[in-house]
Amino acid sequence: SRLIAQNPNTVSINACLEVDLYGQISSESIGTRQISGTGGQLDFASGAYLSEGGMSFICCNSSYQDKDGNLRSRIVPTMQPGSIVTVPRSLAHCVVTEYGIADLAGLSTWQRAEALINIAHPQLRDELVAEAQRMNIWRRRHT
Image 1: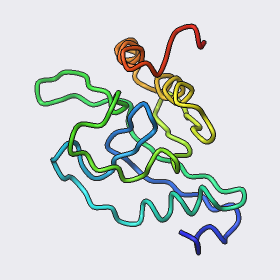
Image 2 (image 1 turned 45 degrees about the horizontal axis):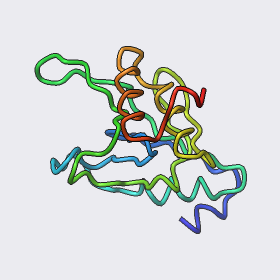
Image 3 (image 1 turned 90 degrees about the vertical axis):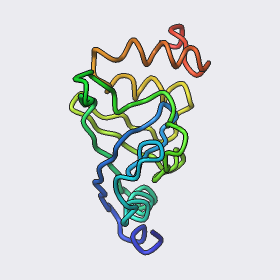
Image 4 (image 1 turned 90 degrees about the horizontal axis):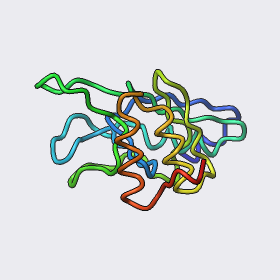
C-alpha cells in the first residue's frame, strides 16, 4: 500500500459483501461462511486512501433477497460473529450503493452511521435507525 500511496490521485474501486454502521467492510465472509479471499483489496483501498488526491470506493448493492425472498440489507448494524473485516473502519473512505455515496473519511461514529443509513435501501432504513439507536451510536436529534 505504501507504493500505491506514492502515486498521486490513485483511485481504487472494490466490491464488498456488507458494511456495518461503524464503517467496517467485509469482502470475504458473512459470519463464518467464507465467500471470497482478500486479494489486494486492503492494499489498494489503503493505498488510494493515503494517496495525495486519491479516493477509495467500496461498492455494493444496498440490498439482496435471501433464499426465502426476504429483502436484506448489505448495510448492517454490526458484523455477524465470525465475519472477516477486510477493510477496517479507520481506512474506509467512500461506500457506494445505488442510493448514493457515503464519504466516511474523518466522520464520527454517529456521522458514519447516518451516512451509511442514507445510502441503504429505503425500505430498510428505519430498521437500521432503530438498531443504531439501540446501540447508542445514533439519535434522531443529531439530524
